[in-house]
Amino acid sequence: MISGKTIEEVKSLPIRDVLQAVLGVDFSIDKNGKIARCPNPYHKDTKPSFAINVTENYGNCFACDLGGDAISIIQTVKNLPFVEAVKTIAETFNISIEYENQNFKDFILNEYGNDIY
Image (cartoon, rainbow, N blue to C red; front, side):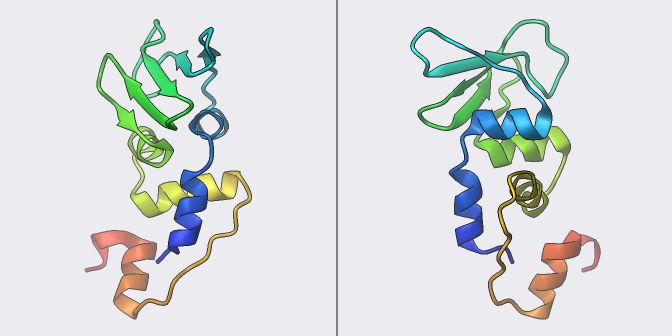
């Protein structure tokens, strides 16, 4: 299982940087520098309905209600399980992935998902 330390390190990354690096989204920042907006990376959108609060590190789409932190947004947009979303972000930002002690079943579930069991 991926360690809590690695997960926290990934969660601490600025959501704007993660979404730009992993999804290639380009944001425009409002005048006060707290809200960034762009078309939603999850559905075809012509208006900037997706907004992130850079101070709270949280994003939300006002058209489809997609929202959350960077990990949950990557999970939804790329259709990945939590562990794979964390790995994708960590690898993109050169964060070394640490694992906690685990039993064999947890290892298999972590690496291959519920398809094995």
